[in-house]
Amino acid sequence: MVLPIGSVNPTSRFSNRAENYARFRPGYPDGLFAFWETAMSIKASDCIVDIGSGTGLFAEPFLKRGFSVVCIEPNDDMRKAGEERLKKYVAFQSIGSTAEGTGLPDESVDLITVAQTFHWLDPIGARLETKRVLKPEGQVVLAWNRQTSQSEFEKKYTALRNQYRIGEPGPVQIDPVAIQQFFAPAVPVVKTFENEQLHDFEGLKGQLLSKSYIPLPGHESYDAMITDLIKLFVNYNEGGLVRIRYETLVYYGRPG
Image (tube, rainbow, N blue to C red):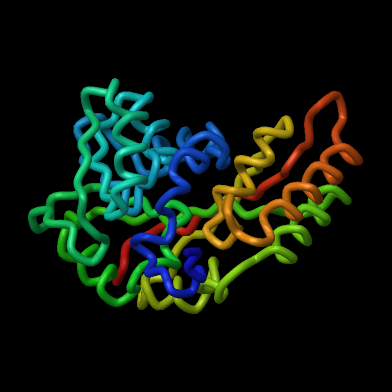
C-alpha cells in the first residue's frame, strides 16, 4: 500500500529515501565553513550540535576540519545512514532525539546548526530547547540549499517534480516570518553562497527520488515519471551530465 505523503509525520517522512538522500542531495560549499571559522571564531574545543542531521551532509565538513559534532536525528533510516557516513570521525556522536527534546545538558552547546530541516520543526518547541542548551554566547545557524532554476533544464526539472508530486504539500521551506520569530527580538544575519551539482542520469534519478513527495517504485505514476526524466536528460545533458545550481542561504544569530 502506498501512503499519501501528507499522511506521514515529519519524523518518518524520509524513511526509505536515506540512501538516495546521502548519495545525491547537494552538499554545502567550502566557503560556508571557512566563513563560520572566521565569523564565529569557533574552536576545536567548542561543542557543535547539528539538529535534524539526516545523513550527515552538513556535519561532515565540520568533522573534516577537526571539530566535534553531536548529530541529533529522530528518523532511524536517516540516522543510520549518517552514522555509517561519519563513523570514521572520532569526534562524531549520534543521538536519536528531536529538536524539541535533545536530551542535552543546560548551557552546554556553543553552536547549533539546522540545515535543510528548520521548516519540519515545531518552531516554538525548538526555540525553547535551543535557548536551554545554548551557552550564553552560543549561536544558531539555519541553512538551506535553494535551487535557483535559471537554465531551461532546471526549469523543466522543477516542472517535472511538480507534475508528479503526490500527497499534500509540506510546510513552506523558507518562511521569513517563522525565521524572524525564532530569533526575535534579535535580528538574524543573512548570507548566501553559490553552490551546484553535476549529475549523470543515475545521479539525477537518485536526487529526484530523495524528495519526500516524489513517487517511489510501485506507485502508479512512477514509470511515467522515470520515462519523462529520461527524455529530459537526453534533451539537456552535455557530455553525459546536467548541472543544477543552488544558492546556499543561511540565517545566523542567537534567539532572543
